[in-house]
Length: 195
Image 1 (cartoon, rainbow, N blue to C red):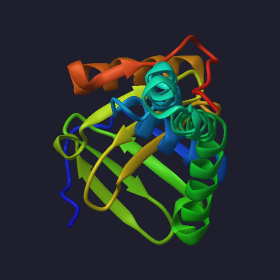
Image 2: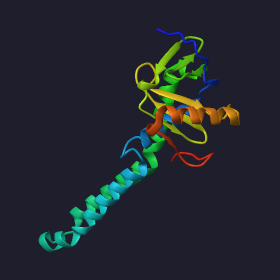
Image 3: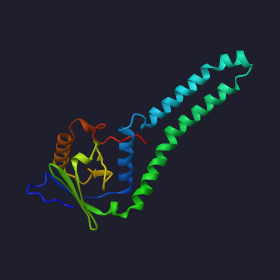
């Protein structure tokens, strides 16, 4: 149920989200909000496993007369690390793009109105009102703003390419004040997330 407000919107933007923007925003949130979400962290953990396996090779040679077992584990960890760093990010992006194509309403032109207490999203087929308390974090890059939510909208994504410099500044300041310590700006203007 939509609740009316007497106050004007801080900012109202219109956008049509693309599958690539959706995938990039979803991956950004997954990677930045989890300690083990970044491909580099998972690959480093595998490299540590490979190094630990390699360090047991002399002991294995001395005790069992073979180094095959530690070398096998070392190779497995190295292969897993390469897969996590190079292959898994692309697969996750492809999965998010399939998710986007599976929900056609995400690709419709949407009006997003930012109010002090909530955000209102309107498209041809839906209206969603989400209070800021339903969102746990907000990340901003030079290309987009992504907020992790719950309920009707798991993600709030705003592409910045169609916004003027003044609108981008207004949006950044508003979200930084709204999310406080749960707001983070990633990279320089124009920067990209890994992958």
